[in-house]
Amino acid sequence: MKNTTYQNTFIAKTFAGLEQVLAEELRQLGSSEATTLRRGVVFRGDQQLLYRANIWSRCAISILRPLSDFSFSSRESFYENMQAIDWTGLFSKEKTISVIATAHESEVFNNTMFLAQLSKDAIVDSFSAKYGSRPDVDSSGAQVRIVVNVMGDSCKVSLDSSGDALFKRGYRRATGQAPINEVLAAGLIKLSGWDSESPFFDPMCGSGTFPIEAALMSANIAPGKDRKVFGFSHWNDFDPKLLKAEKERADDSQTSVRARISASDIMGNMLDIVRHNVMDAGLLGSIEIRKQDFFSLHPRETSGVVMINPPYGHRMNRHNVKELYAKMGDSLKHRFAGFRAGVISAELEAIGHLGLKPEARHIVFNGPLKCTFNIYDLFKGRRNDYKAGKNTGTRKRIQKRN
Picture 1 (cartoon, rainbow, N blue to C red):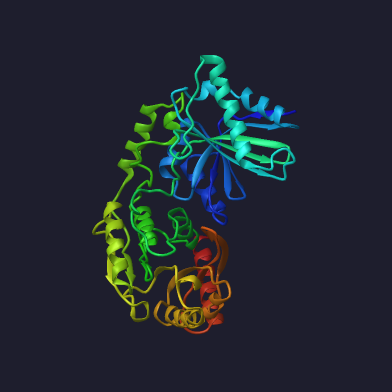
Picture 2: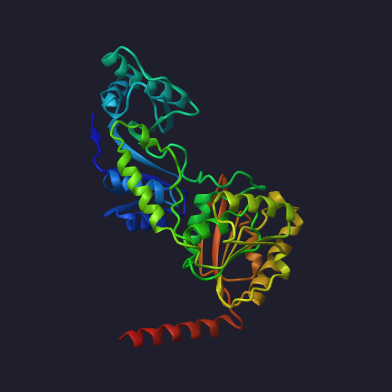
């Protein structure tokens, strides 16, 4: 029966397809090690990096602090291993707790509700044995959230350092249909290769998540700098001075938006939602907002990035989907030459009707919807001529450096 504990190791959870950009983000924040997992990244660092990652991460949903990794053969041995964790050293009995439990391929646990209940029993019994009283359980708004993952006869136990999910930036109080998640939007912008300074267009902006996340990047605004409480705020080792110092550093690093960022939509009622969200994000005046049909939009710039989250089949009549995508592809090719386009869609078949060849393709999930995110370099003329010119330019730059 193994029981492994962890020191200075954390796990950042994210959406499938964003693991690499999250790992790079964590390296830039100061982690010396960042290894990708399925829908996550394992990274190493100290308490300061944990606080910094929660304040700064754009691509993490939550950040877990692993506590223990043990094997078990029965419910009794599971309970013993859970109770052996130093719960009273981690948080006080005055805190409220909840357990988020999952089980896969387990002969012992075929009911996650029972797994969660047995975990809670082991935790609160630890407090009762030491203090004669125990923490209260709060299934919806707990101060301390414990994550229990069972796979076969193995269990991993973690504390959620974030509390509320990190995609809850605080600015999106209103949405339209099928809004894109903030973390997913930020990750897709990073995947597009946008440099935070060149023009950025979202011509089907919905509630404005893409342009708001782009503006936060361009102004170097930490998405979590104004959050009052994190999960780690309720731990025994919480250092309020360290958190304050990290937030002050985030405030000091903020600049003005360095790019022209434009949000447009044909639906005027959506733009009212965008304005409210932009205002709540503190970005009023930094994003151009206008009612505009994408098919009549002519950018005055000759380069930049255009991000599109077009209507999916469940948001429109099915017979119009292919026609929409074909028309959208023509518009991108003829009016956005010189731009890079990123298109996310759950219409895995219809996206081929854009008539464009992607430079890169990523499979991601927008909630339960499996989507493809395609990146296109847009150009005039034939693809072979464009590629030849691009390769010539690359060779010249290499020769100049040498």
